[in-house]
Image (tube, rainbow, N blue to C red; front, side):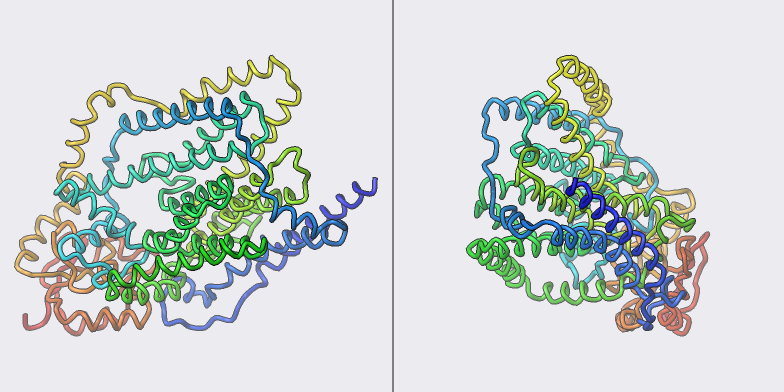
Length: 603
């Protein structure tokens, strides 16, 4: 009875801490300091750290309340923490179990591949803003092999530049279709990596062969539904999460194979690779690596601690030695993005449980994240009858991923960015409850339940992984038609009109400069950018605007206008210094639909 009273008291403390964090959410309001960046934050005198502090308080206060309460009531608190850290626990090595599981794993991968080769290719019109961010950067690098030195990278050099460039080089052909094909390859890779994570968790679960495989199949197919190959839709998880999923897989493999140095070394390389892939995911990935280092330090495993640190230093040294010129541009570029990006494109986060736009989606997501974290913390103090110690550690890492991944939505809190962060908590909570359910069903040992489980799971497999036999048979023909499709096919009539007429003028110039959010125009006109700021939306800070102006000396032609240039705030307002310079040094030559072409005075 004493335990029940303590448990009730702990839950009440957690509840009131949650109510308190919700109450103070809107009262956390740091004093605004003008960063000389015009955006929604600055328009509202809103500090970029407000949302981060509010979110962290909302997540950490209930979590810390639980841990402090456990410390007060549980006399074996530190002993349980110590056992949790030190006890690796022997993983299941039943060869019969794993042979069947591997066959199922192999079958699911085959189904994923068949599904991939039978999909309809994404033939929708391009978004000249978002798609153009990648197309024009990749084209610039394709013609001069430059990286950060010729492109102001806002997401990551691999995502923004190298991905399309590499596939163009492989096929010796430049096209929108090939650039899109690289994206759906990454989606397939993400699906396979998620299944690999779930498959390796099987070595930690305490289930018989039947329910082990039920658990595996259900979660593998749920993971498959978190994203699809339709690039025009908003998924619950995007292929940009690939480095995070790889790191989660490596951590689980490290637990499974008792801190194998090979996995530790690969983890160290993720410190660099993730930053090259995308600096937002790179930040999260490096925080997770820091958590892994802390784990080694707390368990006094100094050998692996030092090995991981030294390997990370070696990885960064190799990057520096390979091309120290681009390394310094990378460092400068990344520092600017970290300092200013929230002010450049930030949208204030909605108050949870309010009628703010997207509040419902945000509330649902952060509450699920909090639930994942609370369950993972509670596992630490539970007996080993249900959860293998390595499974507990895996769930805790997945929960940390859920917590950290929401950072993406704090920089830009619109519906699509919030939705992208829902995938990890949904997968994590699904893993927990499906495992617990399978554990209970196994204990019941009712044969009719086994039959019912099969009757549910078999159609679930077929409906979750659809295969179009006709598309499968003519994949090569469809593929060739897609990658060799002309650029005009992906443009609106208005965009085609502008490109066709603009080419008659731009052909006589070596480079062009955009003052438009239609970032794809450099690619579509097959002209390199006169400055590294082809994606001008991100050049908002005054110090960056001044850099852009300094580079405009070689720009004799500027393209302005377009519907997207008034997106949220007009470019003339966001880049007021550049706009003033253009007005003083350029004159309009011609208007084509929504766009205008300006030429330098006396040119």
